[in-house]
Image 1 (cartoon, chains in turn green, yellow):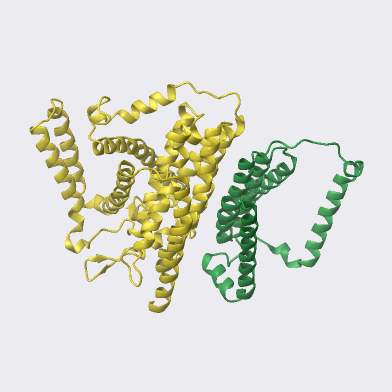
Image 2 (cartoon, each protein chain N blue to C red):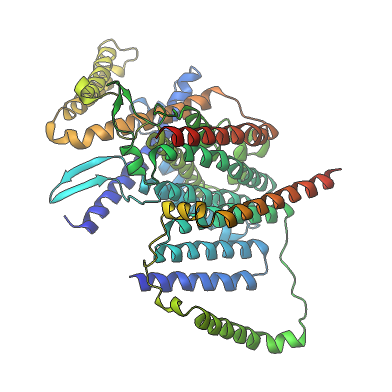
Length: 166
Length: 396
C-alpha cells in the first residue's frame, strides 16, 4: 500500500515538476507547482512526518503559491513566446541534465550512507510536539536567526514598496 | 464490524446528512432573511416552501450549461470541481459525538481522528482559495477577475488572524486532535459553568472566539465580507460566467464552508458535543423538552390557524416534533443522540448567527476590509495569543 501510494505521488510530483518547465503559460506553471507541493506533502505523510506535511500544504501550497497566482493574475501575464535556442543548449541540454542527476544521486549515496534505510512511517519524531520541542531547544539559535532573516526581508520589501509609491 | 465497512457507512451517513443540510440551510436562510425583512419567503413549493430546495436542484440541473468561448476551458471546468471538493473535505475530521456502541464493538462519531486534525482543516481552507481565484481568472471577464483577486487577497489576509485565534485554545487543550480538544473541555466549574474554551481558566478564550468568528465570516465570503461577489460592483463576482450545476457547485461550496466553520467553532470554543450543564442537573432531558415545546407551539398554531392551510400542515409538523421528542427519551438511543443534539444545537445556533448577520449588516468597503484585518484583527489576535501563552505558562 505504502509503496503504491509512494509511486503514485512521486510520479505526480515528477510529472508536475516537468510540467512547470514545459508549460508556456505562467498560470499553468504555477498550478503544476501546486501539484508538486501537494504531492511532496503526501510523501512527507508517508514517511510519518505529519506536521511537516501539514505545514507544507499550509505554507507552500496555501500561502506562497496563492501569492504567486495572485501576482500572475494581477499582472495579467500572457503566455511566453518561444524564441530560437542556442545550439549548445539544444545539443547538450538533455545529456547534461542526466549527468547532473547522476552526480547528485552518486553524492547523495556516498555522503549519507544511512539514507538507504529510510522506511515508510519510519520517522518517529514527526508530531507537532516533537517538532516544537526540537525547534525551541536544540535548534533555538538557528530558528531565531532564520526568523530575524525573514523579518529583515519583510522590512526590505516594505521599504522597496514605499519608494515605488512616492 | 470491520473497520472498512464501518468507515464506509459513516462516510455515507455524513455525506448524506451534510448534503441535505446544505440544501435546507439555504431554505432556512431564505426564510430567516425574509422574516427579518417582514416578508414571507419561499412558500409556494410544498407546505411553507419546504420543497423549495428540491425545486432549486431540479431547476439548476435542467438549466442550459453554457461555456463561453473565451474562457480557459480546463481551469474554467476544474475550478468549481476544486471548490466543492475542498469544501466537503474538512468535514471528515470533525467529531460529532462521543464513542458509541455498534454491533461488534464501539466507534467514534467521527470519520477520522488525525493527530494533526486542526492543521488539516487549516491546510484545506488555505488551499480552497484556488477554486475561487482560478474561477475568476479562467472566466476571462473583468468582473470575475476582480472578484477572484479580491477573494484571494481577502482570504490570505484573514487567514492570519484566523490561525492565531485557533492557536490560543490549542494552548489550553495541549493537542491538535479535534477529539482531544473536545475531551479537554469536559467538566464544570462550581458544578454548573462548563469548562469550554470560552470559559476555561486561566484565560477564557472569548476574544479568540470573537476574532475566529469574524475571520470565519471573511473566509467563507459571507456578508459583511462578501466583496468577491459584491453584486452592485461586480455583477456576481467570480461566478459571473458560470451557469447551471457549475454555479450550484460554488453555491454548495459556500454553504458547506459555512457548516464546516461553524462545526470547527463549536469544537474549538463551545465544547463540541458536551452539554451546557451537567447530566445530574437534568441536561439529558433538554432535547425532549425542546422538541415537546416546539410541537406544542406548532399544535397551538395549527388549532388557531392564521392561514387556511395551517390547519392541515402544522398538526403534522407538531406530530413530527412529538415523535422526535419521544425518540430522545429511548434509553438505547440516548448515548448516540444526546451528543449529536448538543453538537447540532451549537452549530445550528452559529449558523443562525451567520444568517442573522447577513440580514443585519451592510457590506464593507474594500479598503476598510483590509485595514480591519491588518490593523485591528491581527494585532488583537497576537496579543490574545501572547496573554494566553503567558497565563498558561504561569498557572498550569
